[in-house]
Length: 176
Image (cartoon, rainbow, N blue to C red; front, side):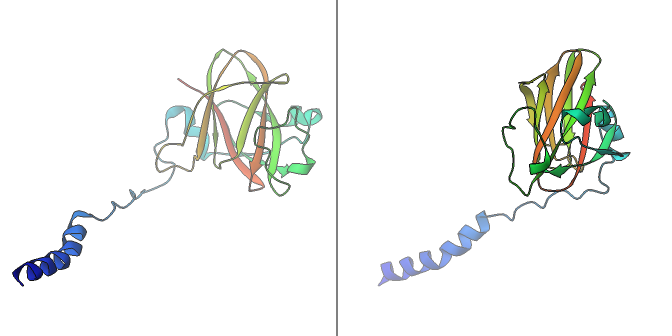
């Protein structure tokens, strides 16, 4: 009987012991204000200008991203966009996309920052450039995705695909 009582007490005590070991998850840090402490190269993220993405190469001169300037880009439905090369992640018929030109003045690492999780392809001619890094933006910012490319001087095309929204916060910045 003594063994039965001890076994019963052990069973009763187990949930309490287990709950004592499981500390509640730490709450996510509260942000006093979004986009306040951005690195210098991304400071323009808070002063976005409007820009319309090109639907094909014929309109690229009207859709130029300037390094160091942030934009809110109006994208087109994917079926209306003529991509130079098939995007690695094209998205479906209800997704949005577009093309942008960027003129790189000096060799270096450039980050393309987005406010969404859209897919980014960077092309030189019709050759896709390999990314050298990717990640999320700094904590307490609206920067959702950042992809880095090592680029040489010249004109590149940035293809955006698989975006859920018609508007895309986007910025290109030279990495220090």
